[in-house]
Image 1: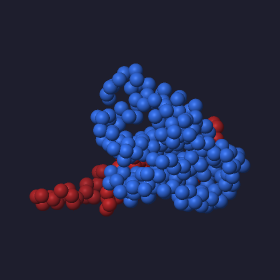
Image 2: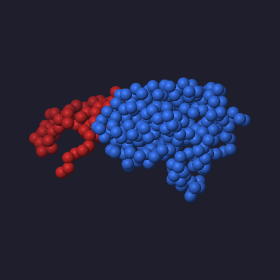
Image 3: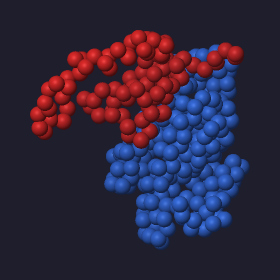
Image 4: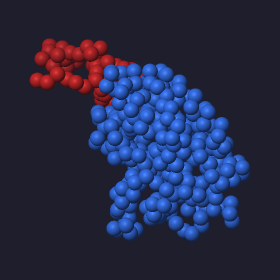
Length: 96
Length: 252
């Protein structure tokens, strides 16, 4: 395997409208924050998608291991009491 | 009538710089060192071509002969082009692309700041829109100049060489012939003489931060105001105009 000669990897989060959460858009390579923000701007907001950008070094992100998915995520589905399904939705309420 | 002719020529000068540099930058598509930079350079190319389109459309209206922006862009002969020689220079290595952009974007940031106050409302409106783009082009070019200049031994050498190679095309940016003077006097154009000092000061600051030397050669190329170009423009036009000349009136 050749050594990776590319610049550091950064994860990009774009906010489409003020007040909405920043959503993961993808990643870019860059040597520092400034370059990462510029590259993110050029790569992910070319068509007016964003009003704000966050970049985070990919190595700073902790992630779960897919092998642990059964242990971590499976049990929650058969615990019906965790889901608020016993309430009647008021008419007209879209998001609860 | 003379005023209209002058304004038409002045618009061509503004537009041709954008059109030709935009075309040069578009040649970098798929050839930049990394994909992020590929997108950055092609975005900048599109900004330039978009600006050229807006100005040429206005030029067509001033001329009043029913020519569209495409007619003017793609159906003129080499000698009719008014772009500065620096915009037609070859891309060369990445340092040359950046050096050319630094010289031009720094010039344009000063020029269009003044054009925002132009007595011609259309030019002022285009300037106002394009200035936001130019500010980004300048940041992009100056950041890379600093990175490369203050980078490795190799990147420093290449960046200095690029700045030195293109230096002789910068004097022409501030030349003013009778048309430029008349347009400036009308409050439509800009007096470029005081701008040259600002340009040099800003450039010195950027190059000092980049640990690069300000080029000092005195010999300067000239010619574009009278339609005299380097051999590069003919090659650009043969590619740029190919479609319109082979399939006249072709539409998307």
